[in-house]
Image (cartoon, rainbow, N blue to C red):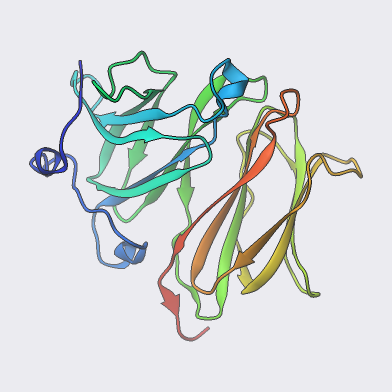
Length: 252
């Protein structure tokens, strides 16, 4: 049974689901719970639906028979979170949005997320390498960064084989290079100086860009997660960028 709960009702479940929409990830230094983000990286065009594909995202304890719908009408290319969760194992369903009875439609994706204390997780709705809908959980690096730096991670969640992804500064300097990245792998997180960077995507070992490059501004004390989503066959292949603030580190 799927049920939609108001924020007040969900907070009454504090022994299991701990509420609190936070503006940043500074919680990690003081909290014994974990946090959960959702990324909608599944173009509707790739599964015969309108490309925006609004979805309801519901979370619950496996086997409980109840899923609490936290995010409603989330459209492709957008992000939600964080919500704060107690340690435990959670079932996550992603189904077509229903404004009258949220969470009532058969899920497109159903998956499991494991939350530990002071851990940050993102659940991504996306395509497998072969074009089937799937949900993948990633752990977010929320460690402190130097006051003038940000951090970037690349994640391959597109219907494509291995890719080479680069995120290089406009001015000479170090960047991120992930070669032979397969779906659903992610690069190692890299600390970067703040500034403007250019993201490029190529098939692994090939010289030509698969899509137009994208500029990205790295702000101090922010974490950036660059997703490759969509399908080259349907013309939906693109970058999505999720970011949130980190706790700054004042000295090396």
